[in-house]
Image 1: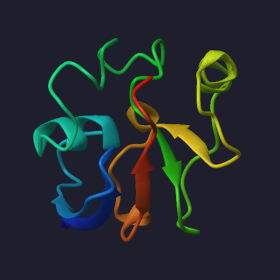
Image 2: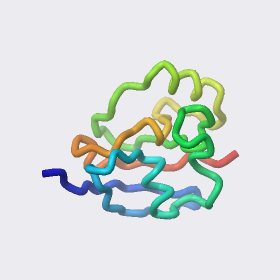
Image 3: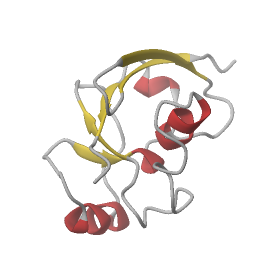
Image 4: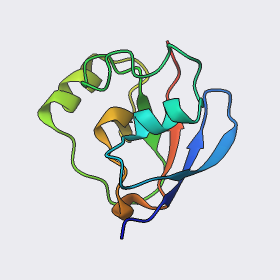
Amino acid sequence: MPQDITVKITDRNGVLHLVQAPTDMNMSIMELVRAYEIAEEGTIGICGGMAMCASCQCYVLNEVKIPEKSDEEEAMLSEAFHVKPNSRLGCQIQLTEEINGLEIELAPES
């Protein structure tokens, strides 16, 4: 039976949000941020989760096992601003039981 997981998200103002995330709805981190309104409307997930805009870029802050970056994600991050070694696109991280406890920080908007 799928279980909710906990994700810690630091927003663009430095505020920490401890959110419960469903693992049975095929959602991504980007969709979770939108659902909880952690980023301003229209500033995250602009491409709809297709790894084509980097508006959902985030920094992974802990050692939770997440899937490797796809070639498309690597290509988008190579063109994005504020990229760090721990940068990922939130639209490419699916909410699964394996990422329970994930801690991320949203990258600056511009």
